[in-house]
Length: 151
Figure 1 (cartoon, rainbow, N blue to C red):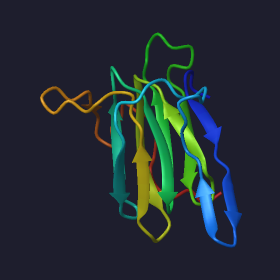
Figure 2 (figure 1 turned 90 degrees about the vertical axis):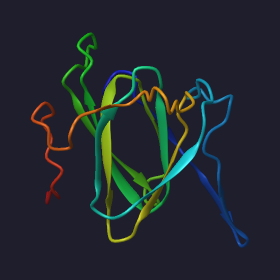
Figure 3 (figure 1 turned 180 degrees about the vertical axis):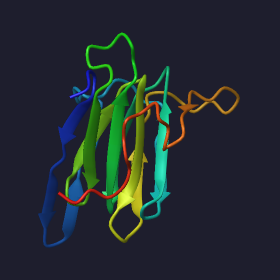
Figure 4 (figure 1 turned 135 degrees about the vertical axis):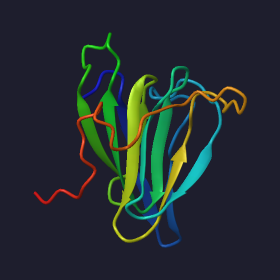
């Protein structure tokens, strides 16, 4: 796994009233600091890639649908430089994924329904100087093909 990437398994507590899933606590080992929270609605097969941050970490959880998150370690000083990781997040795999600053990332909704992704970045979004550095989803810099893979 890419250095600095962390996963927290999430537990759903269910009874006849419904369910409750705790996502992130201030006393979790995966928690660093709070910047803000936002939700992203994503349509099926739309690719949102690639970008990275210099100052913030992202913490992704999908509360509706399923997404494939792909990470690429473009950090030249990292022992995992050049590595790719794929993660599937959502209703079929309840996890919180921590993406460290400097790691390229992108995702797409898999399946036929839109997805809802919550992000808990460690910094507040700065509209005047966004901490986002982008590369096209089909960039030759990143050895990844977003096409559906039949295994």
